[in-house]
Length: 382
Image 1 (cartoon, rainbow, N blue to C red):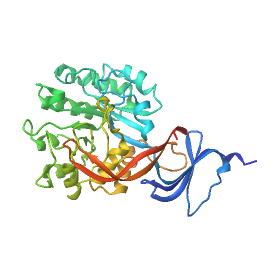
Image 2 (tube, rainbow, N blue to C red):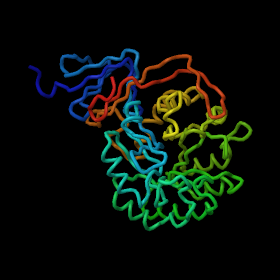
Image 3 (cartoon, rainbow, N blue to C red):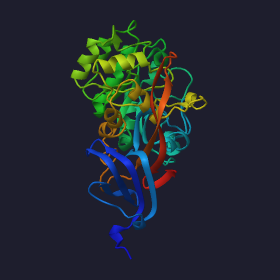
Image 4 (tube, one colour):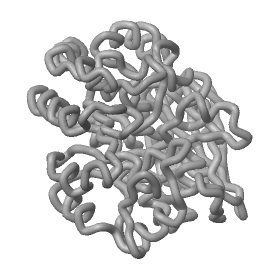
């Protein structure tokens, strides 16, 4: 009989295991007990006996990563016009933790916590919308300026502090309508400063409000999403990243992809990456309008597109594991180490894939797809 401390619920072996935080990169295995990682072993230093586990899985051609973290999407079982079921459309495809970009605000957060966060096996955090109504209406959430309620937002954050790592402030024309985006931003900064949280920021088109003026209102640790879109704003001009964008990064502002239905352009991504401007995080902006598309819109596909645009592979992996975990202050997620939460994703690759952007331009490269997912020690897909 095996001693209790040498028996595991699950062992996953892979031809390559990668952890940006611990520096692991090579063949190996991860052993799981209950909802925690018990052992991380590399093939060069340790062997594992499948008989020591209740279940064992082997992926000789796979890449085993910590469970993927999507910093910008729309998980919602109810209440959001953009929402998708996280347990149906997020975790089975490799993402074990997801940050909602503003699906709920102060008036809808109770419902969101009860019907989405508490009811899902996917780990969900909320970048609370500055707007009281969140994304519950078909019109822009700031079309009525009264919805940008500083006191209500701050009170909701105090009530659900452990679930809210950021404040979502989108000053786009779609979100604001005829409302002055400067006043929306002023109120968003006030909430963020009062609660000591970062802003997840969606920019305004520059003809309405110059980008440098918008970015100068952000603080170190704030996050700009939709960073590789071509319209209605673009961070690249003449093949080079705009000086105001570089200045913002120098000041500690972070940049996220937020792919979405219209926010990723290969030309912009390639130019920015060639100019040395990589995103800090890679995210999907997954929403209900993606669900019926011929090609699935999941995080491994978005990762594949960034790799095809020239982003180094290990940078892509860090941008969906260790970096978002750090931004969200998830100390035991986004990492492969003993006692960390047992969230695992195995990717398998198909070469020669074609990727299309919102303008119909194509890139080609390796397509990653989720082959196996473990969420808190539970096998989700096989």
